[in-house]
Image (cartoon, rainbow, N blue to C red):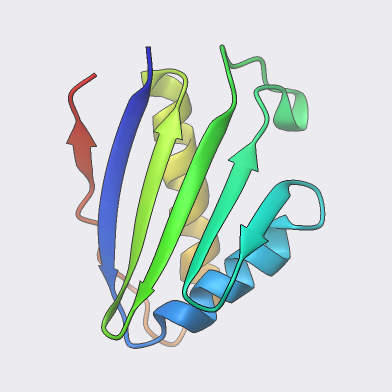
Length: 108
């Protein structure tokens, strides 16, 4: 069973943050990106975890926002990745903090 959630983070710097997130995670994760779109795969066993399966973050830069979608292998996995994304994005967007994260969970 997959668990998914999406959020549109209001910011005029969506492309910049997308690229910073992807470059940061490219050091130890599978990442593909352009200035407009990106994806990051979080392996099921990343950092000693033991999730049921891999998770994917999909990013889309907009002129006024950064769209993020997480697809995870369990509800707990999804919650953990939401927190990781928010912490990293807040670190890169420190001039704009606090950013809004109105997550929209999708029914499984």
